[in-house]
Length: 141
Image (tube, rainbow, N blue to C red; front, side):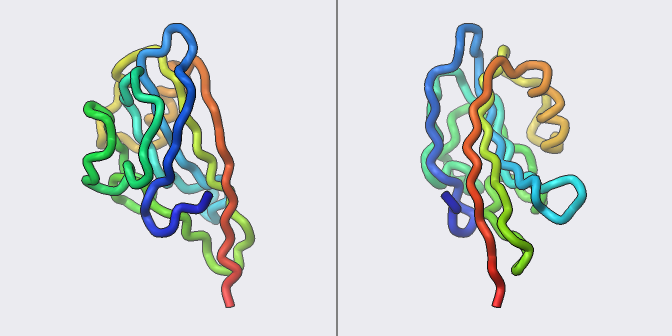
Protein backbone atom coordinates (compact mmCIF):
# COMPACT_ATOMS: atom_id res chain seq x y z
CA UNK A 1 0.00 0.00 0.00
CA UNK A 2 3.06 2.27 0.02
CA UNK A 3 2.46 5.23 -2.25
CA UNK A 4 5.76 5.97 -3.93
CA UNK A 5 6.91 9.54 -3.53
CA UNK A 6 4.34 12.02 -2.36
CA UNK A 7 1.33 10.65 -4.21
CA UNK A 8 -1.52 9.74 -1.90
CA UNK A 9 -3.16 6.35 -2.42
CA UNK A 10 -6.71 5.81 -3.63
CA UNK A 11 -8.99 5.52 -0.58
CA UNK A 12 -12.67 4.64 -0.54
CA UNK A 13 -15.19 4.00 2.21
CA UNK A 14 -18.85 3.23 2.72
CA UNK A 15 -21.41 5.86 3.57
CA UNK A 16 -21.14 6.81 7.24
CA UNK A 17 -23.74 6.18 9.92
CA UNK A 18 -26.82 8.35 10.47
CA UNK A 19 -25.75 11.81 11.52
CA UNK A 20 -22.66 11.92 9.30
CA UNK A 21 -22.26 15.45 7.98
CA UNK A 22 -18.69 15.19 6.74
CA UNK A 23 -15.45 13.23 6.78
CA UNK A 24 -11.79 13.61 7.63
CA UNK A 25 -8.84 11.48 6.53
CA UNK A 26 -5.48 11.22 8.26
CA UNK A 27 -2.26 9.30 7.70
CA UNK A 28 0.00 8.92 10.73
CA UNK A 29 3.25 7.03 11.37
CA UNK A 30 3.36 6.07 15.06
CA UNK A 31 6.79 4.47 14.58
CA UNK A 32 8.66 7.61 13.53
CA UNK A 33 11.67 8.26 15.77
CA UNK A 34 10.33 11.59 17.03
CA UNK A 35 8.73 10.73 20.34
CA UNK A 36 5.42 11.92 18.93
CA UNK A 37 5.02 10.06 15.64
CA UNK A 38 4.75 11.77 12.26
CA UNK A 39 1.69 13.16 10.47
CA UNK A 40 1.82 12.47 6.73
CA UNK A 41 -1.63 13.78 5.80
CA UNK A 42 -4.61 15.48 7.38
CA UNK A 43 -7.59 16.44 5.24
CA UNK A 44 -10.94 17.46 6.74
CA UNK A 45 -14.25 19.15 5.92
CA UNK A 46 -14.81 16.51 3.23
CA UNK A 47 -18.50 16.74 2.24
CA UNK A 48 -20.78 13.90 3.39
CA UNK A 49 -21.65 12.81 -0.18
CA UNK A 50 -17.98 11.97 -0.88
CA UNK A 51 -16.91 8.36 -0.26
CA UNK A 52 -13.51 8.24 -1.95
CA UNK A 53 -10.36 10.16 -2.67
CA UNK A 54 -8.59 9.33 -5.91
CA UNK A 55 -4.93 8.42 -6.13
CA UNK A 56 -2.92 11.62 -6.01
CA UNK A 57 -5.74 13.66 -4.44
CA UNK A 58 -3.41 14.79 -1.69
CA UNK A 59 -0.72 16.00 -4.05
CA UNK A 60 -0.35 19.74 -3.54
CA UNK A 61 -2.68 21.66 -5.81
CA UNK A 62 -3.86 18.61 -7.77
CA UNK A 63 -7.45 19.85 -7.76
CA UNK A 64 -8.58 16.32 -6.89
CA UNK A 65 -9.81 17.05 -3.37
CA UNK A 66 -13.55 17.70 -3.05
CA UNK A 67 -14.67 21.32 -3.01
CA UNK A 68 -14.55 22.67 0.54
CA UNK A 69 -12.04 20.11 1.85
CA UNK A 70 -9.11 21.55 3.80
CA UNK A 71 -5.62 20.14 4.20
CA UNK A 72 -3.53 20.88 7.28
CA UNK A 73 0.25 21.04 7.08
CA UNK A 74 1.93 17.69 7.44
CA UNK A 75 5.04 17.15 9.56
CA UNK A 76 7.20 17.77 6.49
CA UNK A 77 5.91 21.35 6.73
CA UNK A 78 3.87 21.29 3.53
CA UNK A 79 0.22 20.89 2.65
CA UNK A 80 -0.85 17.64 1.08
CA UNK A 81 0.31 14.07 1.38
CA UNK A 82 3.90 13.38 2.40
CA UNK A 83 5.08 9.94 1.34
CA UNK A 84 6.64 7.23 3.47
CA UNK A 85 10.29 7.87 4.28
CA UNK A 86 11.43 5.93 7.33
CA UNK A 87 15.12 6.22 8.16
CA UNK A 88 17.12 3.48 6.41
CA UNK A 89 17.55 0.47 8.68
CA UNK A 90 15.00 1.74 11.24
CA UNK A 91 12.74 -1.27 10.68
CA UNK A 92 9.17 -1.34 9.44
CA UNK A 93 6.96 1.67 10.03
CA UNK A 94 3.18 1.56 10.19
CA UNK A 95 1.20 4.10 8.19
CA UNK A 96 -2.24 4.38 9.76
CA UNK A 97 -4.84 5.73 7.34
CA UNK A 98 -8.00 6.68 9.21
CA UNK A 99 -11.31 7.87 7.76
CA UNK A 100 -13.53 9.63 10.29
CA UNK A 101 -17.26 10.23 9.91
CA UNK A 102 -17.99 13.49 11.72
CA UNK A 103 -21.15 15.09 13.06
CA UNK A 104 -20.63 18.48 11.43
CA UNK A 105 -19.95 19.86 7.96
CA UNK A 106 -17.12 22.11 9.16
CA UNK A 107 -14.89 20.62 11.84
CA UNK A 108 -13.78 23.99 13.19
CA UNK A 109 -10.07 24.49 12.53
CA UNK A 110 -8.79 26.21 9.43
CA UNK A 111 -6.08 24.96 7.08
CA UNK A 112 -3.36 26.54 9.25
CA UNK A 113 -4.18 24.20 12.14
CA UNK A 114 -1.64 21.60 13.19
CA UNK A 115 -2.69 17.96 12.73
CA UNK A 116 -2.83 17.58 16.53
CA UNK A 117 -5.44 20.34 16.75
CA UNK A 118 -7.50 18.71 14.00
CA UNK A 119 -7.20 15.45 15.96
CA UNK A 120 -8.45 17.21 19.09
CA UNK A 121 -11.59 18.30 17.23
CA UNK A 122 -12.01 14.83 15.76
CA UNK A 123 -11.92 13.37 19.27
CA UNK A 124 -15.16 15.19 20.06
CA UNK A 125 -16.91 15.07 16.68
CA UNK A 126 -16.10 11.66 15.17
CA UNK A 127 -19.08 9.32 15.24
CA UNK A 128 -17.35 6.45 13.43
CA UNK A 129 -13.97 5.61 11.96
CA UNK A 130 -12.28 3.02 9.83
CA UNK A 131 -8.57 2.29 9.60
CA UNK A 132 -6.18 0.72 7.16
CA UNK A 133 -2.62 0.09 8.33
CA UNK A 134 0.15 -0.26 5.78
CA UNK A 135 3.79 -1.08 6.51
CA UNK A 136 6.90 0.13 4.76
CA UNK A 137 10.57 -0.29 5.51
CA UNK A 138 13.74 1.07 3.97
CA UNK A 139 16.26 -1.71 4.64
CA UNK A 140 19.19 0.57 3.84
CA UNK A 141 22.33 -0.84 2.31
